[in-house]
Image 1 (cartoon, rainbow, N blue to C red):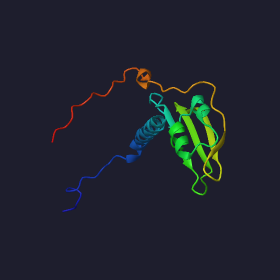
Image 2 (cartoon, helix red, strand yellow; image 1 turned 45 degrees about the horizontal axis):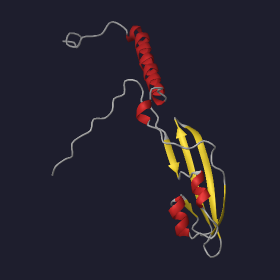
Image 3 (tube, rainbow, N blue to C red; image 1 turned 180 degrees about the vertical axis):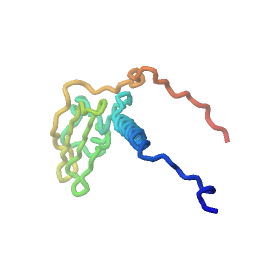
Image 4 (cartoon, rainbow, N blue to C red; image 1 turned 30 degrees about the horizontal axis):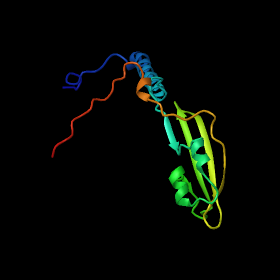
Length: 155
């Protein structure tokens, strides 16, 4: 008894199905690539405003007087963003405001001190317009909901 009765043989060719299968695979790959690429730059993503550094106002600079000690300067200006570890003769106050991935304001003020640690002068310029914090809850995209507040967890 031969094996032809037990094992069925396939009489049609798979070559007829390769073109539709290639189209399905190609369509799926193009769809996946499109979704992946557009997901990286989706225009509906909300960007927060980012403020970094010290806010320095003109009235703060007006209060500085030559001969002030470093503690007096810190009282008026706040702690500097950058302290040079090799010298105590200059302090840097840097501010950057980034709105929606664009830097809109930036300034750099450097304060200088003499050998005894007394304030001498500053360099740099402040922007003409005053820097104000923005209530970003007013600029949420349409349909965005605020997170609910939760009650404190009791232990």
